[in-house]
Amino acid sequence: MNDAFGIINFEDQGIRIEGLMDYRPVSAISFLGRYRVIDFVLSNMVNSGIDQIQVYFKEKPRSLIEHLGNGRHYNINSKRGWLHLLGMESTIHSEVYNHDVNTFTQNLHLIQDINKPYVVIAPSYMVYSLDYSQVLKAHLENNADVTVVYKNVDNANEAFSGCDTLSFDGSKRITRMEPNRGKYKIRNISLECYVMSKKMLIELVQLAAKTSSLFRLKDMIADVLSEYNIIGYRFSGYVACLNSLSAYYNASMELISYPKAKELFKSDWPIYTRTNDSPPTVYGEGGQVEGSMVSNGCLIEGSVIHSVIGRNVVIKQGAVIKDSVLLPGCFIGKKVALNKVIVDKKALIHHIKKLEGTSTEPVYVKNRDRI
Image 1 (cartoon, rainbow, N blue to C red):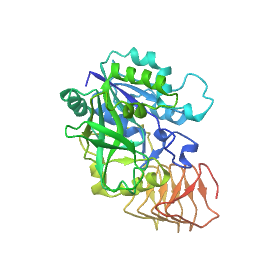
Image 2 (cartoon, rainbow, N blue to C red):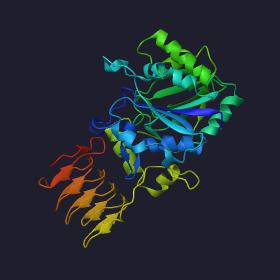
Image 3 (cartoon, rainbow, N blue to C red):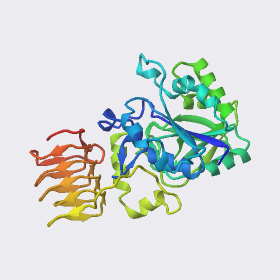
Image 4 (cartoon, one colour):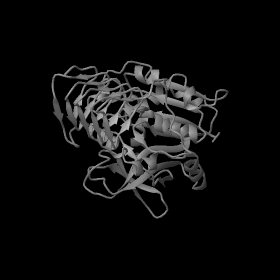
């Protein structure tokens, strides 16, 4: 896919994963024990043949920068490929102005300098596996100005809150984009993945900046539906939108299921990530694991049931971890019981013996906390 470069966009104000986002952007949040959220869209781009990629960040970029490094562990072509991390070039006086169009505008010269005629733009907080070269092929066949990837879902009343819903005419052309308010089950949900020419991107960014200082790229696309040939590309695979703490939790629990995980992880579509040498997990006497994802370097002496355990987690004797997500480096003391809990990195739970949440409101234990 030598005709396109990639842009990985950051989250807007409607995305709020409470607690976890206090320390890093959504793109850098640990997911399923060994990955970061950005690994999925970045792997999609690399596997699709895109080897020139811009990654935009909003704030708190340290953990993202550390994870991405120079991009070599993503199998990006070392001779002609590159990975650039870009943010705002000037101070933002109000959070409402910290959106993608402003960031694109300040980095527009770097977009203009790329010697590729097309661009694939995708957000970091959508988790799926998709060959973008097929989207570009459909884009060209349909002679589209913009192609929007979407999924028809039957749970829009429970998930994808705030995401755009799409309406079409008989020729796949999008006639309306409006936020999902959760009123209906079946809806066409935009994955906020757009394919267009570089020229069209620059035109839309400049038009958005002139139209409203608060316009995002998706606002501009919605505003010009009647003026351009903007079509939909239907994606039928697994999608998780990590736009809230409960959405993050439910996606983690859902992907513990092997049949569901097979929809996302495919033998011919590797998900790349930064790896490190670590010993295998040690299961002590009395350690039991049932239907869970357990990463390397752990010590498990208690019981783990239907949970996600990150690297280097210690679970002491008599502890029971059920339907929970433990990020790397956590310590769970003896006889502690966790049910529907998300424990952030390097937190210690020892003195309090029981924490219990719900699937809609999981308990969150903050980074490096001592309980």
